[in-house]
Length: 199
Ligand code: AP5
Image (tube, helix red, strand yellow):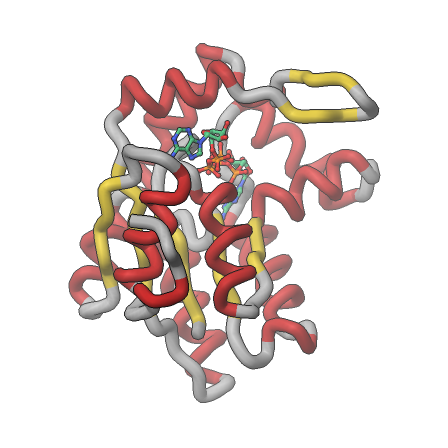
């Protein structure tokens, strides 16, 4: 299956992507994780992306699209994938469609995780990551940056909901509840309800 997980910062895309991809046996491809790995490795791409990420802005489309194209060309993504955090603009969605068309492929489903803003802010301000044995806050999870990321989402990414709905690909699901409950809803939207014992 070729799937996109859509949703605002803190909606649970990364959490669900790992579980769902594991269930379906496809790689979970997170543009945020690829950028963060490049930032940690201090690569040229990472140094460029860091400026945008720290500000809570999107990394420019041309950089992001080229990176995803390279990742999708890897052998493990040939038979299917789950994209987390890409596309994030209409231009990225159009380029993804073009790239898949060239390969004779298409997206099977786009699942949008719906969570109200107050809960997103609560989740992100409480998130900590284990780095070098210490729990640290992600640079872009500071309250003022979270607010800006949510604005960027509303302006640049939310229109993708209508874009994919128009293509008949969109399932919007309530992403409030336990992780297991949300997983069950995502799997049902993907036509795979039997894969989860939870409800
Ligand atoms: P990215 O890493 O994609 O960040 P994001 O979209 O802002 O998403 P988050 O990782 O903050 O949240 P999530 O939805 O994955 O939720 P999570 O599962 O972690 O992108 C970071 C930056 O990279 C961007 O700002 C941009 O600069 C750049 N970038 C990335 N992709 C790009 C692109 N395509 N184009 C341009 N730039 C790009 O969960 C959040 C928290 O909630 C966790 O603590 C989790 O434990 C908790 N949680 C999860 N599920 C539940 C639940 N059901 N109930 C309660 N808590 C829950």
